[in-house]
Image (tube, rainbow, N blue to C red; front, side, top):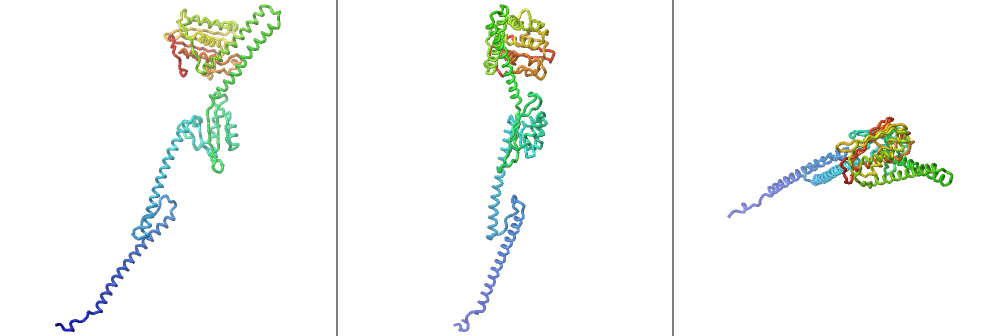
Length: 463
């Protein structure tokens, strides 16, 4: 048996020492962990504070001067989560901005195309009258080519240069106030030189302050020419109606009130009344023809016609006026002419217009010549005179309805301005044409050409 001395208890001091060593080691490990955690947290906090300081000093928020921080602690995790959300929102904002820019560019291009398709010139100017934008039509009206840019130029200066006769009026009215203004401006002394309708309207902001001006410019030359010709026609028509009516009334009253008028004088009075009535009937026919021309209802009633006999009838109509003015008249026609399928009455009226005008606008004892030519395709009727002639700038308009020359010598002679328009329309309906060569103070030469093979189909008015 072992003795009691060998069964002695362990040394408590050794056990305590070992436990103490373990506790100290654990404390050191915890302390090291805490120090490392505090250091890592402090580094993240310092990094975050530095980025926040940069963010506060940044001039704009377009590019954020921030980035994620390292670490898994709540502070770093919260910062990184915040940056992720902000970055996502910024990406969405950039996408929306690009979409808006794309839509804005598309809308701007579409608006520019719409403005350039307008028939009116449109421009925007600032308060100092400087053009900021303009469509291509306005550049054309202002005398610029399509690729030139009107931006930066003065609208009033350009209009003043363009509309010399009304330059002072334009500047006075446009600078007098900022209220809407509409006016007409001439480009020359004559209407045919050009007339512009100029309109300016202010652009107001929310406080009713003028921020810019919108200009609209329209070329109304053709409208003004039509109005001028219409007014001239009304004046001429009044004269054409009043004169024969007055003569008819005067001679009729004389015949009714005097029983002692001899037979020859009565015959003269009756002839005058008949002549004036014929004049009225012819004028009414011209008005009816114009009405039919305007509506496209002027039609032909064709029959096979002896053209030689037709020309003789035309000459018979004009012969009294030829004799009255002692005109030296010459007619040259081939011995035989082809028979054409034409509207005899309308063709006679057309040729009477041509030959009658030659006699009417040729001074007494002048010369008038009628010549007929035939080639392989057409029959040509030439009417030549030594009369007043037509100026070069009016030659292109003599076939317009209601047009009469501004020459004082023409204005003194009765006329409606409808005869040549009717003649041209009749020639066109027959598939032919009317042309003119003229020189002022030397005379004119009109030519009506009719095809030998008449097309009886309806003619297109656009031809």
